[in-house]
Amino acid sequence: MLKFRTLTAMALSIALLFALGCASEPAKEEAKKEAPAKAEVKQEEAKPFTMGMILVGPYNDKGYSQAQYEGGKYVEAHMPGAKLIYLDKVNPADRPGLTIPQVVDDLIEKGADMIIAGSDDMKDGILEAAAQHPEKMFIHVSGDSAWSGKAPANLGNVFSRMEYSKMMAGFVSAMTTKTGKIGVVGPLINEETRRLMASAYLGAKYAWTQVRGKNADDLKFNVKWIGFWFNIPGVTADPTQVAGSLYDAGYDVLISGIDTPEVATVAKQRREAGKETYALPYDYEKACDGMGDVCLGVPYFNWGPTFLRLADQIKAGTYKPGFEWDAPYWANINDHDKSPVGFMPGPGLTPEVKAELDKFIAKLGAGEVELFTGPLNYQDGSVFLKDGEKATDKQIWYMPQLLEGMEGLSSPQ
Image (tube, rainbow, N blue to C red):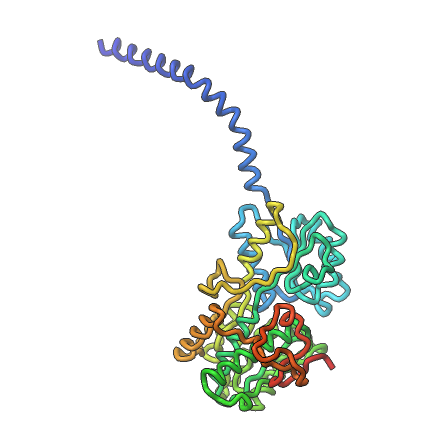
């Protein structure tokens, strides 16, 4: 009886399976029809996308080039199938004779779907390369050829409004200085560096006069240029020596405008020797690491969200080349997923100054404080902005001189 029941159960199970198999045959056919479409979608989503990047300095310079490199790595982490390829140290000292079109040819041969040129001094070469490869999309960071109408149809410009972060650097410098003497170690002289140095000065002047209640004439703001974005022995002035000479002259707070951290390094050395010195490095969020309380903070670039947005658009075929100059995400300027620039407070920033900085940032974000508002004169005394006049973007971008009240050269000698 047990054997009979077992055989019966097995027969019923087989019959049931057969019935289910027959009943599901149309569904199987439908699944077969749908399977290729689903496979195609999955394959499309996983399609690789390669970003080619040209860096002016070392990818690990703890400054400008590392910020861009890490922006590319952000894209790799957030875009399925994305890959970063790059060449760093693309400058006349490290790679003499190498041209931007040659670098672009190599990156495209290695599979680059888009090309990012990271530095202002690459502007002529990237225009030439873009014209030679109309099938690819190009982004020139810090350039303006799309704004001026010189760019081919496949080249766009992007930059972040670092002017605001430099205003913050100037603000905390003026809130901290004991001597009223703020120095700047600047790179080369061009429109970009003039407007950034002017922004730092305006932030310092606001803190000095409006918050600390002091006379503007008692604030000294001196810019010393080294001649390039970073030190090239035998070609540029040595930033270590330039920073040291400013500290020796009584400038107790230095703002860096160069791509590398020498200014903070010198400040730390002087502090260890018994002098009260402070510094603000530049470009890279972690530039204060290891510097201790000589470091007041870092105005830095956060390229990840911008590069990801552009890569998404280029991959989708929706990118329209143009000129973009991106403002901070004012709700949180240090939001790594939203803000293209930030200001990271350093260990040397006191709670009192930090509180005043937060108020200043809130006023900048709300438009209550607009520092590029007249009356402002250029360094030679000519009028930049009349009383109450607000600067246009182009007036700020194409700044021809430093501002009245600033010391230092406005053009190369």
